[in-house]
Length: 284
Image (cartoon, rainbow, N blue to C red; front, side, top):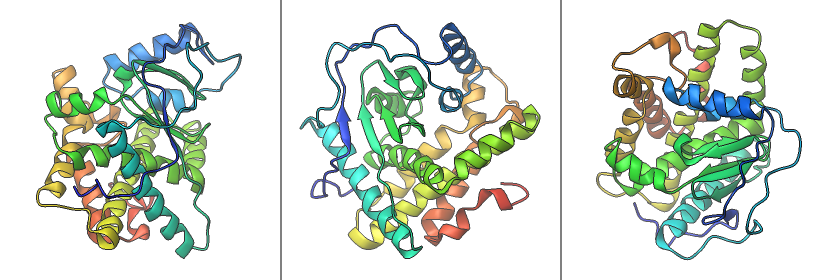
């Protein structure tokens, strides 16, 4: 991926090395239990955090938040990818007569306090709609390479673009509507809505890649394969097979490997926002 000459975003905040106290916002000990249960069953705990109200005071930190991203290569890479998503979505929103509101991105180490609650690095990257921020511990990229066997800089860029896709959903009101619908249906239907939400974010990630390459020629040989491999590697079926030894489709919350690849490719190949409506197809 050609990124070194790209613009850096001003919306990256570096909290790496900061220590977060063991306080919790929202559900207290219930938050811990929900996260542990989610991890055990191969479910992304960020879905639970995204739905939790926030009450009380945030945990204390040893340093004050707010410093810009450091100059190390990984931080710079993240900053460039985020800036590229900003440029892409700003133009897409402009064409639709809307104004894109840029998200923040927080780099952290080990654990972090978001407006959606306390989160640990084991959860992986997540988006919090309450503070419109993407959170990522860069150790996830090592896991992506070693545990999920999805190496490459464009695989890493796909992860950021997917979380920014959730921000697009949040800004358009899609996320709120889905959460309202999920509160009124049974577990199987709720999981289906979650899958459709995640697949749309995958499609939006592909949409970003399409427009970014068309405008700025960021793709190099092998990049698309890296992203498709990453999408496939973090499918619910593959993760459940690894963690539980068997697959339960009705419990999927992010989509199968085949679905994630297909929807990312759909956004990538069409570049058409309308093609990413996962909620209007019978079988996503």
